[in-house]
Amino acid sequence: METAVLDNRTIELDKDGNLANRDDWNENIAQEFANMEGVGELNERHWIVINFMRKEFDAKGDAPSIRKLTKESGVSTKELYALFPKGPAKKAAKIAGLPKPKGCI
Amino acid sequence: MMKRIVILGAGTAGTIMANKLRKALKPGDWSITIVDKEETHYYQPGFLFIPFGIYGKQDVIKPKRQFFPKNIEVIISEIDRIAPDVNKVYLQNADALDYDFLVVATGTEICPEEIEGMKEELWHKSIFDFYTLEGAMALADFLKTWEGGKLVLNIAEMPIKCPVAPLEFLFLADDFFRKKNMRDKVDITLVTPLDAAFTKPIAARELGDFMEKKGINIVTEFNIGRVENEEKKIVSWDEREVEFDLLVTIPTNMGIKAIERSEMGDELNFIPTDKHTLQSNGWENVFVIGDATDLPSSKAGSVAHFQADILFENMMSAIAGKPLEANFDGHANCFIESGGGKGLLIDFNYETEPLPGKFPFPGIGPFALLKETRMNHLGKMGFRWLYWNMLIKGRDLPLEPHMSMAGKYIPEEEAETV
Image (cartoon, rainbow over all chains, first blue to last red; front, side):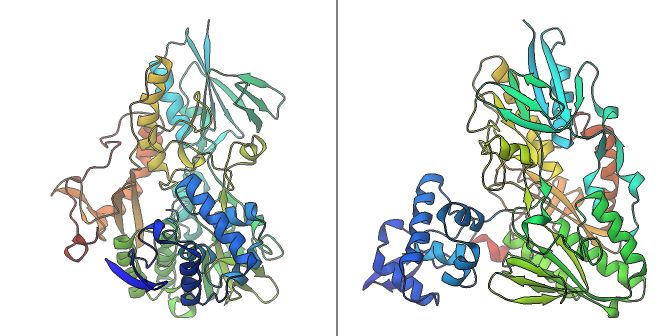
């Protein structure tokens, strides 16, 4: 199991480098992940997406698709890619402390 | 009093269910009504072969009525909407059908209009789909005289029907241009939203090697935002560009509009369904099968066929007022045409990704899993006969609905992580 030092603690990560345990998450860790992913300083718009993802995950057990995000969070696809360049679903999930979205087969 | 089952959709899943249910339920007790928008049954796995002139139109169509059992009511109409709270289906021909049980088998359709610029001046001129008969036929015409250039195959977003079909298309294209002595004039590229050639790691590696051997390029994590018709390029949401001379698109796949009108679907009009029992999450007497579900299984005929065994059992339980005990495990089984008269076979479920081995008889085969053989190709071509003559008539095939680990092995380097 991999670990990383985040928010001055040693924290377990899963095989994709996302948090192994959701309980470890807090806003500082979110910001540190955002820095690692090249997203930068998290603003109000980022937080709309992050909070939406956390809420969806609690309800459904999986992170929402980009289509669902744009349909229900009020953030357009264009803006989503501007906020989380190159892979909003994956990056926002990591920052939100969730596992990598399962994706479909 | 006579009770009624309504089946919406007479494709692979709906037709199998009609046959199974009619055989088991007395016509005096249960009436069965099946609804579809058209009279023609399409052998969809055959669409793949049409662009390359291997199959023609006549190879993939037959009248639906040829496959229905006796003593069912057949209605040809578009569906307007379902009203599941009052057990009613409204049709566009103005009929309203009451039901005791409903089976939704309305499938998925391609929605090129979901992508900006896709269905404009280049549509069916330099941009083609092969998930419809019209698209596949138009592409066949185009390829007859095409002199080469950049062939780009783009998957718009997941999930799509038959996730291996795009790869098969590329392998067959490679073969097609080689035989025409023009492979050096065609640059072939797969542009995919996934991070590899396929969704499942072991198979993705195997198929990725294949692509490399055949000189097929891959652009990953590309989420298409729009098509620029004038400059002939596709542009991702993060502004990466890929130019094309010929664009073969797998557009967004969605459930039919009637599901949206009925407010029964998710953001792609797929119906939230219990992944084991196939009962809809919303309504006890509504069952969903095949591509119409939101299940995390592949959208494919083999899946619909395995689901049909499970759903039949559960509907018989529901009719008898018993708990639903049959469990679908996500089983899929797909032949992958790899070109040059060879093919691969993959067999997997929710829990187990495609593994190497022999199928269906351990150690014997005759089919080899995740390995390119001539026998697998013959299996794929022979399957059409099986489909028309056995499968959609609901006859038993020597295939278990549940996936079996017998005959499969986990490659050593993978054993630790799987």
